Length: 168
Length: 413
Image (cartoon, rainbow over all chains, first blue to last red):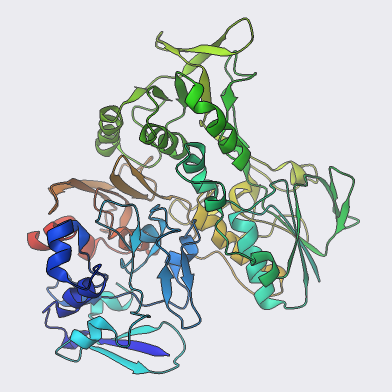
């Protein structure tokens, strides 16, 4: 199973992960084209480099939780957890009620900005050979390995204190 | 072990899945008056024709087979024989059980108004309600929706989206969604509805339904004296929990059946979950209903786990969360925004996001700085963090709108 580790201490806030994510989720994997045709609303990264009020950088990525609250809240049946442990959204079934958004304790289930009512979340690049964000990470903050560890698929190390308890 | 689940919606199906995971051999029988599976949260979409009844199914194909659930659909349970441990159906069938789960939900409560009884009045609780509305609404000239809560507001939006020329919404409170929004965001929603053609009557209520010689509704009279033409009336002003099966057995019951943190009723081997129940809500620390989909699913899982001999309890349970999108604007409400403690501090932060939308964050904190309730308007992408802070009693901290640098806020859209 492909698992991702996020070493928060290694994040320099370059946002290469965000760009890579936008590119692989644009219609033709072409960022400029997606922006030209759909404007800023058409491009939305599934991950995000956020900042805590202490000024720490914090990469916000879906953890593909063992007990996924987004899926638990889904009223349309669009969200499901596959054999590989990844929680994915079927855009045809999603009605954009955003109860997943309301329920994700990590703030990584988000509304689409394209104008269509649709939730967006990390799909783990399940259909790709690599994970775009990790492949684009120049610092080793995002690392992917084949493992079969229990718990969430994506795990954090070196979390800032303010994020430890609250699973920020 | 023989498990009987009455009801086949959010709570009942979540319970069935959970029971099966723990008890591969047990017999699971699901009895329900409904004849198919559908998401009640999508009824406004079905009623307006935006989605088909089949699309409202929230379960994957082959669900019952996969979880080994025997379905007895289209059957109304008329009684539970707690001594003999069996349920009786309207058609005379009896179904024996060892443990039973009641997920009978609630029904539309018609306001006690003269002329309310009779044809032309619709609720929106069951798939057939939605199908009935869909069949008639295009031929009706004036639709009046009584109640501007979640159901009424979403239905009004859906009916305008499909182009109905006359949709009126009557709400007793000063603004729509009185349980989910406060004054600033509530009046903004009112304006938004009016901009999109909904005739909004807030701070008012229906006092009389006028009918013609054939008994069909022609108008409603409001307390303010206004008279609205109405040939189709939707009652969305509250619900009543379907508690009768257990109240007749003497179960502890308020407006809903009272359950403990294990989803047990006061009667042995009888569990309950979903809209039919009341349980302790973590935000107000009070026994109350939690009539939202995620809460029903959670209660269903907890009930199922305990019925099958496992150990689970309702942790951080709350029904005071809502998410909806109306006329292109998303909003999320968490906590008791409808009755803020006078000691709470209220901050309203407004900003324009990168796409020019007006966004608001309304945060209520106690004197320790702990987030007690919040409303996000426009940009809801961080809503889960606010919800988590409310149930876990975290300080507002990172989430305080003014704490984030302006460029991050601008980007948050």
